[in-house]
Image 1 (cartoon, helix red, strand yellow):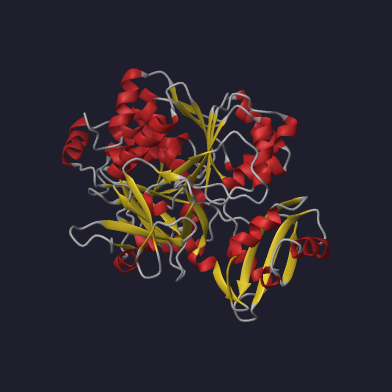
Image 2: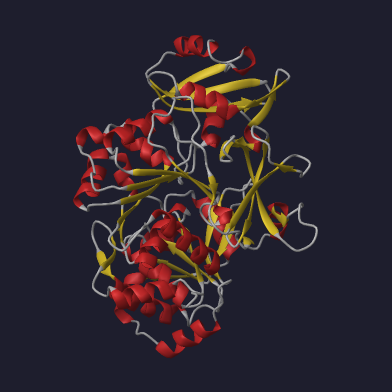
Length: 509
């Protein structure tokens, strides 16, 4: 039977594997049947607080309790939206201004802070622990809600940064997740006996693959606390002790392990499948992973939050990649159409020609929550289709085809610059730098006012020596005008290089 609500996956797994661990964190674990019961209790409580398709906000770290609450919001006919407890207060307030949530769920650990932060707001703050102690399951209410549900109902809203300073709430429905996860798991053979090591925070869409692959297949998801990614021995112990088999991680998380020599301490030899996304994977760091886990399958995933996680994939070949080589983002997943448009909206098909990556299909998000203007700007009619309505998402990313038909990500549209009369991709400079000896990460910015290319890098190289090497491999107009060596690269909460912090360091206004 076709599923129209992700709760059907959860309930199916609870029927087949009732006593199996569904999710675990270092302090708690929960079986599938316990998760259903807890989520139904929370859903019964929330159903008296919210109407269908209304938000439930969460203010707590990712955990077993958070998972129970998130599915509880879905049982209540609503959708969930996670607030990062480490975000600046101003950003939290802006997110809540967009959501206008009536209720916020937290836990014992974060309750006092939540009350302090949101005291001036008209929002009810409730501890999940209290709901589980007092609430009872109201099956008649939950059944009525389910009977009214549709597969186009929103499931979650994840907030990404907005150019105006107001976060954009990407709204994703049940159907998009159901369609993508089934295809993802079948494509790569994720199965019931897998143990998925969750790296991403729950307000970041990489975690969607962990959470919903788990309940779809009946696998177990091990939630890895954020602080473990600043302590390599703790992280490697956790992966080994929990016998993790599948990693779906941001590139920065993988780089942390290899740069900090995590494999020199311990190798998680049960890992068989490694998928990475979010940024271009530095080949040097990839090589360290492949040396430690040579028998694992490695997959490069590509796709922005707005198309439900990923739209293309490339399974890495069993060969050495050159240090200055870009790993392809590959081909589209089944039931997703990925294509390139040039600046005049003509279809790009020739190898080597660059165009904006555009996507259509069930995967495309509902849009930005309560923001019709921003939604219309990038969720548009396919200009190539003059016959029927075909909604596409224009990613703002640039790509080109290889001779074999696979796509390569080249840059962001806003990372393409005009310098000294030449059109330059900053990513090309970054790739060249990262291929140099003893360089771990690199990021380039352009100071439009002063017409300077700024290079920030981590590694054990003097700037003058590095620049001398770059002169041998880059044309003069691509050479950085200023090199800044950093002890570590600043990162956003989603594990990407924080370019805004680098702009401040470089004095770019």
